[in-house]
Length: 216
Image (tube, rainbow, N blue to C red; front, side, top):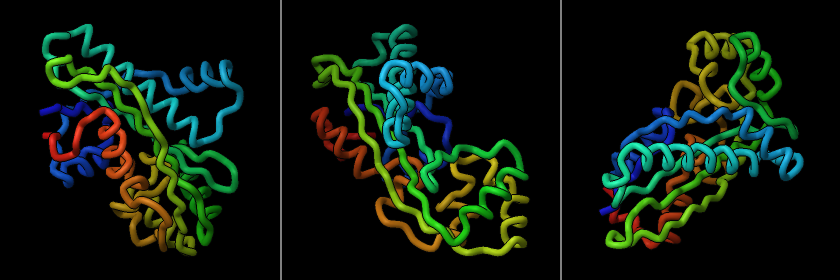
């Protein structure tokens, strides 16, 4: 059975996979995200958010795959690597992690009562050998989900920011944690907002001839 390696340090992504019965090995990528995006912009021109997260997901997955191959190629006969990256697009502007608590508060004041689109790029690299059904494939796609934010007051914003949670996540919010009460509704995949779309990952793995039930 294939082994999944998650090229991400996100606890939410790991928890999402575990909740679906998959326990991956975690190997955090070492890519310079700013450099990756700058290089991609030089090659392809200005990237929209859906493309930017896909470029970063690919870079993370392929960097980890390359590092694993260099370290112990014989151990990778059944490994598939997945990389992910997320960005919030709000009013046409890409919103990443806030620089500090003041930035998180200002961001929430601008987002409350409005809506944005959370883009999550996914990229998979098939390192399996021929005997394990390996395809040598490397492919990906982006999940985009619309998120409506509650019209919360300044006191609620201050209290949420004081928890520290908004400082560590793209868009300054979570849907599966303390930020959940402040999300009114979504249109799209809930798991994509958490950071890893299980249906999209299943589709990508199917393209590699890996049925979901085969994962462990």
